[in-house]
Length: 68
Image (tube, rainbow, N blue to C red; front, side, top):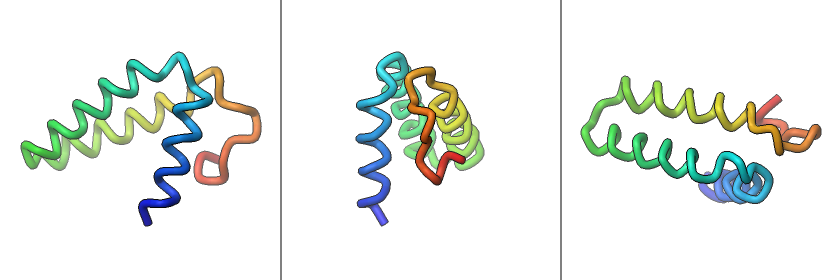
């Protein structure tokens, strides 16, 4: 389960330079919400992070299947 996730994370780290700092901030906020057991906030933050990542201008035209 985690192996595919790791590949996706590496893909975006390499391809979305403009998102790197913001992505780190988004992950920190998500981990904070999880640590506080705030499922609603964590879900909202996760969805927003995915949306923001999908909009990254550096992503190649051939997006991975899970983003189509």
